[in-house]
Each structure stands twice: as structure tokens, then as C-alpha cells.
Image (cartoon, rainbow, N blue to C red; front, side):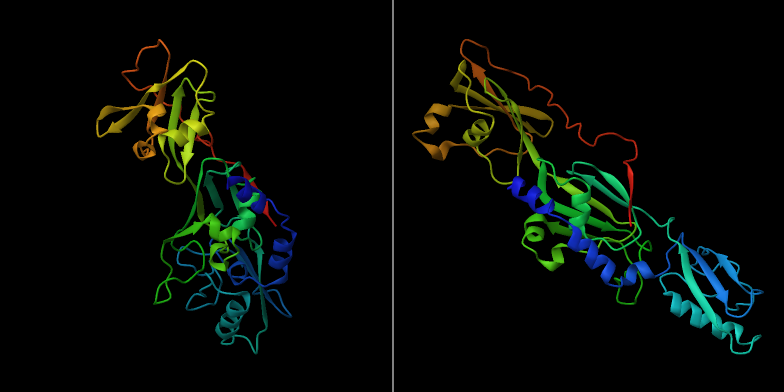
Length: 312
């Protein structure tokens, strides 16, 4: 399943880029915090202005504008219309051109979790979830198949409340829906979004198996299936002495399993829980009494900021 997901996400993204450039994106065309806005009065330069926004979202320091011109999440044409109305009190029929000249200080998108290259992205054009995953190198083997997108309040310009105000919200996306081409599963990613590819819960198979390893369970997993996934029993394995070590609150309890007996009675094949440790004993070896400390997944564990990429 993961191979299919990686292949699907690694398809050429040219058509995505073309679509992004060919369609006007309302979000990108609106003024955000951090933008630099240029105001040009046609036919003169006395009132020309360039600057950013106040904390209230108004143009910061534009003279003669009373009340201040609100610019946050508005288009260049909307702002120009308000400036013309404000300056018509002192100028005859003013003509104003407004342009966002610098978008480089907008909030970045952060992509974390079960992806090959966690990254920060500075968006200079529209981008959707599928393309973002492709740019990160695709999903890793420990992906749970779910993605969450956290959209902070007042970072983007999406109106999510009934009264038109922005509110924080979290979207949940299933990779299977994204691959199936469902439109709602490939949302546009906005500046400031935090995208997390969720990790699957792991069980650990250790001892006398051919490939001791953590196994990331995306569905119900039994003891026999976990051992098979770890390469099966090694030559020295004692299939009658398998122990499940399970954390239960602050204690650890052990469950004995006879793998050979499961062949005659599959109903006894225990369903594993997240973080169970399956220890396969060797012939002549002793039984483990205390669970080992599983190796922590070091992938993406660094506390340093991930690399920054420009999407333009």
C-alpha cells in the first residue's frame, strides 16, 4: 500500500504547476502580514507610499488617510478604491495603483512527521497538498495513512466563521482519498499552515527472528502476522516460547504464546496493541523478564529547524 502511495505522490507535478499559474488564486492575491505594499498616485509622486501593515492590519503610516486604510486580506483593487476615496477630499479625481511588491515575509508552511524530508515552505504561488508531499520526497514507511493540516487564526485569509472572522481549525485527510482523486482530499495549502503526516503505532519484534524490527501497524495485527513480517522464525527459534511484553499503566505484563499451536487453532492468535514487544526465544535460551527499551525513531527527531524551500 505504501509503495502505491509513494508512486502516486511521485507522479510528475507539471500539471499541478500549470494549473497553479493558470488560475488566479484569491488567497495569494490578498495582502498578508509581512507584505510590502506600494501605493502609486498616477501623475505625481508627492503622495506615493511604500510600507507594511500595522498590528491592526492597516497600511502603516499612509498620510492623509483618515480613517486608516485597512489592507489585511484585501486585494490590491479594493485597497486602491479606498485610497482614492480617502484622497478625493484633497485631490481632484485621484487615480491610484496598488501593488504587493514583496511577499517574502509571509508565514511559512511547515511539513512534519512521516515524510522523507520535513521542510518549511515559503509560498510565492498556489500549491496543494499532493504537490507539497511530492516536494518533501513522499511518505515514509511509518506513515499511518492520515494527514492533519492545522490552520492558525489570522495567518491566512480564509474566512471560516459565520461572521466572516478567521478561526483556527484542523483538517484531517486520508491518503487513500488523496490517491483516489477526491477533490476535498487535496486542499490548497495556505501560508502559515502546519501539515503533519501522522505516524503509525509500532509493535516491536525481537529475538530469534530473521529480521528483528519495529512494525508499523495501520490495521489490526496479530502475533503470527507480526512474526511473518519480521522475516519469520530464525533457525534457532523456539516457536513454542514466544512472549508478548505489554505496558499496562505503570506496569509490564507478559503473555505467553505458542506459535505452533496457532496453526491448529488460529482463533488464539492474539491481536497486538500499539507498542507491544514480541520476544521470540531461542532454543535453550532463558525467558526475558524485563522488556528492552525500544529504539526511538530517530527520523525527523532533530530539534533544529527543517530546511526552507521557496515555492515559486
